[in-house]
Length: 238
Length: 238
Image 1 (cartoon, rainbow over the protein chains, first blue to last red):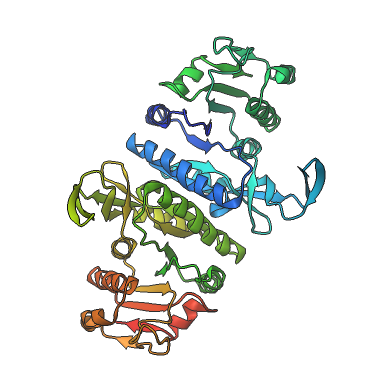
Image 2: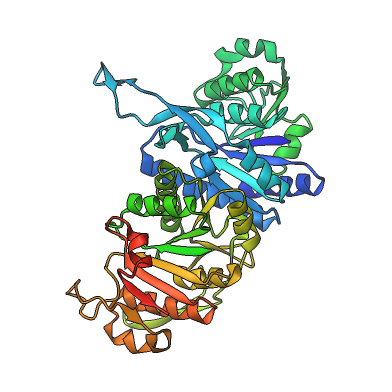
């Protein structure tokens, strides 16, 4: 089974991605797709994201003959999270205790549902939010959730697509792609990681902790995004 | 199998509805839920609706121990629609031909997916948009789609919940509920139907045309909305 994580950037080309997925499925590959968001915004924003981005990915896949089903972590209790009791936020320079923050960490995955859908020919397209053990809708870190999902499903290989050709040595030079990284040395690359990349790096580290053996990072903007990374165009971490 | 249609009004109480559904499921009833929208707005609005209203209904059901799964008509090609080639719109008093209008009529339902989920203990919560035979996301009339879905599933009884206690003789008097209507005489009630109610009436007529034998109309704002209508509080059409 191959887990494919897709970035939320505006230049990500869903059609290119869907085309590759269609080919992989024709070859008998089992696929689970996770649509990325790292926006820690309010409930309503998340909902519209879950509605908008998720359903558009589903429609792109349908166009390529892949019978996709879009699900959030709420549906079928797909992603169950432990809600954070309290979080600290900085407001006007002061650290504040926030008690009504609806975020959580995914601890339990309904892998039965994912396997049921795949067994019957559907491709699940999964996105936040999650549902807490006390039934609240909670925002959650998708990188962490994906790693937890990979473990629950016994996923060994993961594809991560975003708006860059891979891990860059120099963030301003798209040609400075680091082709391979040893997973044990992943931490050494934290200084090269800027912004979102830092989060992706930590997410990948979690994935390895959860049993994943190989992670491909690659460009979600160009044609054949998935075949590119599987053929070594991008960054391969193992 | 019981098909429950829930209105999109702001006073509809999802928790009350979820409570009744939980009880029905404990009793072994098979349930399919359809969340209502009649807004013919743009794609993005629909998406956020599909995200927001649908997922909140799912979370309400989860809170009551019902393992709901929210799906749009796009997911798994649940609702396949024939896209309307051209529609006519009135703009500044002039009738205009619109060629890029993304609406359609649901003609095919993936009942296998619904039955698969129900068989495995999930309750599907379904909402627009649909997917066209040419893979476009299309807005669709939920009343008509529900009737088509009822036929595909062999549904004989349908519950329709909205922001009124039933079909009213006088729209300004909530006590003027018409308790029973013979399905053959449904057309006679069109003069009493105002606004959305007219659409509901036509939708119910379609449901009867598609093999449904009994339709319950009732109040989605108060406690025990489903048990009320099943016990005759509201309008029973048969």
